[in-house]
Length: 442
RNA sequence: GCGGUCGUGGCGAAGCUGGUUAACGCAUCGGAUUGUGAUUCCGACAUUCGCGGGUUCGAGCCCCGUCGGUCGCCCCA
Image (cartoon, rainbow, N blue to C red; front, side, top):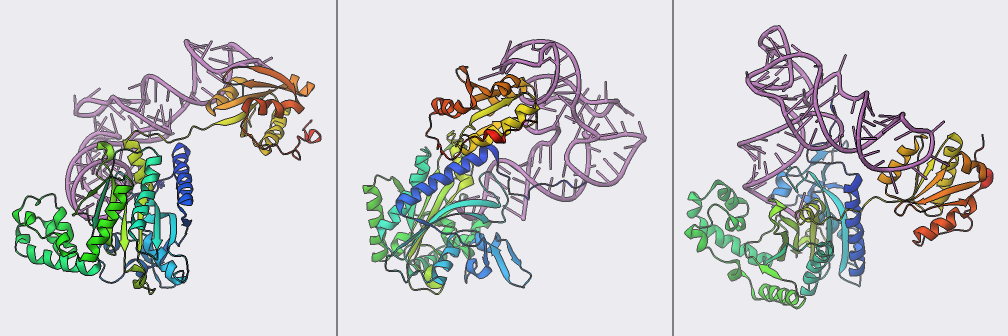
């Protein structure tokens, strides 16, 4: 017999876990709203060339994409990251023809990458991200970082470090790459295999090597700083100044380079420094892109954004022992005895639900003991007991679970008594009366 | 893509150098107690040990393969 299981690197989310997600998503929507960001949803797959553009050297694009041919012989790719699709959309919908720049977007979207799964790394992961497109201003760079931080800090995270760097404009970076390749031309021969690969693919990453970082050639390597033109340098200084004025501590790390090729100027990564975080420590990261809009056929407008992995955020919260899970809670559990009472419980439950009370009841007519245990497990605040006596008299017993206070009331007073006990501003629509005629009396 | 490690009921876990009814704990359900959440007691709950094949008189325990988890590398959110 076949045993069905989720594909590698994917997961089912439900129960207490999904409640955490909902909490994060709610927070994201609240914060982006006050920061003035609008949601954007772009397709989960795009034409492959949206993600894989010329001369791309990144692993994400070259080794990890889910690319397939559809039945019409189109090459499509499941989105591995959020930015490219949004820029495509921005240009396709000619949003640049808007007087109020910049455009500020946020998204919550699954991303697909074919990688070996690990803690904090899934084949389907979910990103909260933002993009600010249409203007280039250090204030925006700072705002973007600040928005991301507000999310993780509101959740209570403390073990954070903001790493920041500048790659300068495209020409600065190219010049620097050239200089690096020249510098490492001979030394690379006795470096590790990874470095040899990096030398070809992304020379900037050689500097980040854990094996050869003591090597004299590494120490004497040219610095990106020396290849920045005056404008690039001034821009970065300006970003740092604003962050400092906002009391955001950053660590300038001149080895920080990002995984996607399109970044220019400011790049940043916010990492968890908690020891239990595992090796995937980046909670969110991003940077500025000067040329992406132009590459998609739009005007020369700059943008900046970040992606935050929800799965990874959850790992980071876990590492800091921050529990954001909400306890399940129920307003009312109706305990019923006998078929007639159970049928009535159904009617009563519907009535209470339409009046805004979260209500459960027992469908099966199990023992009192079992029903009370369920009420307890569901964290019911109030139990309503309906048995033969109550059915006869048109009454109900209401029991406040935490204090064990118990009162007997007429049907018509149930709502009143509940409001009195629960007192949580439920909506009480007058038009929604319990229909006594509709009761089941078989 | 490379290397290490692991895979027994809903959960946690025993299972000795292969020997035959797969412990135990938690949870769940029923009863003692036909109307009240605790405690206690009694009873129920894995034709089966991720999956497939092989060795053997006999495999949860051995071998091969495969799928999956996990950790590190690479890389990234």
